[in-house]
Image (cartoon, rainbow, N blue to C red; front, side):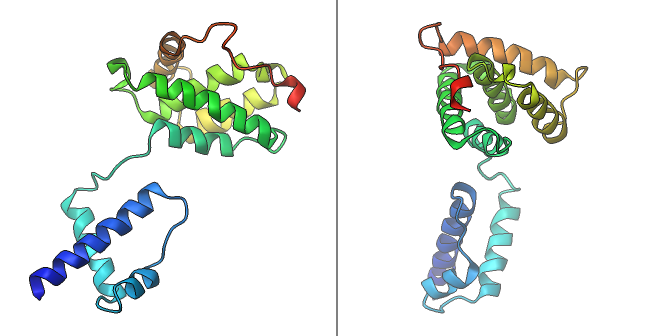
Length: 185
């Protein structure tokens, strides 16, 4: 039973790690204990989780550019209404998905790709012209504080390159561009 029990515990913990990484609603250790019909204790589950993470050298699936974009948009101030946030996300997601087939984007951080796409979309939707607070928020709270960008950094230069390349690959023409969101406020 030792080998088969270890295999079942490893499978359960792999599922647990996958849920932690890919879902916004976490499940607790108590749920896993109950799911195993008390075959495994919370301590055994935690020990196996720790073992698996160390064995994998923390090489777990990192967040994607789309996940970063979702998080960035969720951080936008309350003045940006939910319909506007939804529209922003759909256009950012379109831009990010357009990058998937181009190897140019491989060396760039997903957070940088998401940030560059977000900047493009809010510019295209003319949100930067609404009072100026949104642009300042995105630059200061997301760019500077969260991503650590400053004007002299290599990553800031990468953002400029990414913005141009994202526009190129997503081929947004003037008739396909997102609508101005000024009327949505």
